[in-house]
Length: 459
Image 1: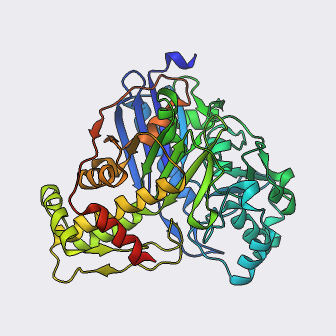
Image 2: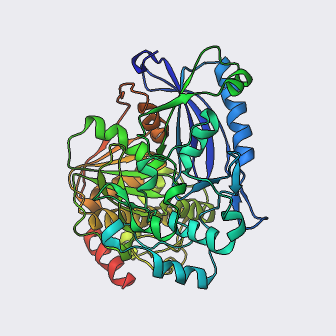
């Protein structure tokens, strides 16, 4: 069987907030079936960690159901970054997969800061908690030396799931290149940190995201009721999965704003010369192994927090409130979710929000998100049209404000399967263009002055 004959692709898509198994139609790109569950962190044990066995049970159960209806003939994987799986000699986890939001003791943090390579080598900034995978590995090795001594293989997270399905261990460039401190994007090789940590011999072989790693193991295939050999593809970091469809059919330069728990911004066609490590700008590595200037903030998590506080708001009411919010000088400052983004060390607060309506607070929150996105795009020198995919592509108020703030057309891809669609492309199927909404930049009275006040208030 070759990739061109795949009819349906099953994608195991494990995000930080939710895990899902999606089946996509290879001909239309449509999501024809989906099963999902929350991604839960276990707080007990040596450190907070993901409930891997619950995720595995979910994945098997979902694949079994979807194998019956609608069926699939290939599997691909995509997961969030900032995670690694440490295997022992028996192929099982030697240590739990650590939650990247766990904060380490100060002495261990300081020791890692002194150990890690420079930004000029990795283009990976020093991030909070365990957002650098190198920091996770250093913590696990330093705090749990006996357990770490039993580790025989280190796998990036998407490739761990590939290994469970196929029995073949691998690492992959998009996961190694997403702010891990472990990769040098200019040389296309491991950074000096790998040898400083003494783990080079533990790193699984590097395979292309596009490689068919192997068929589903016979015993798993029997459990799932798969009637023929089903190949499993190597897998890809989720933000790079969202980027991949655009790389296939768009001409650089352009920017992609991939939204989920994080808002990840890619400046395709840009360079790495002006990235500011102190402001969460970095290089990602795309599925073809090329460095891409990137920036990010935890915008999805922030909007979730704000929406819970504000309550439901009609979209038309929110858009009607933009003018009053600007006229009142009602401002929301960063950061609602601390520890990342273009304005580090800042603490969120409202200005001029006394007696504000829910619609006004919602509009101000969308203004905040648009200004944060625009700041992130400026940090990476992003040029050309802006493509927004993921949940924010459904937020009309945000899209209108982003286009106005950036002064450029915004193209929204309202489907919520950007990561799943990108992962499906690893199997060699052709990308299928979905519905797009084009939002031209419009003049909004007072927006320029409002933007200036926002920046001044941050300072």
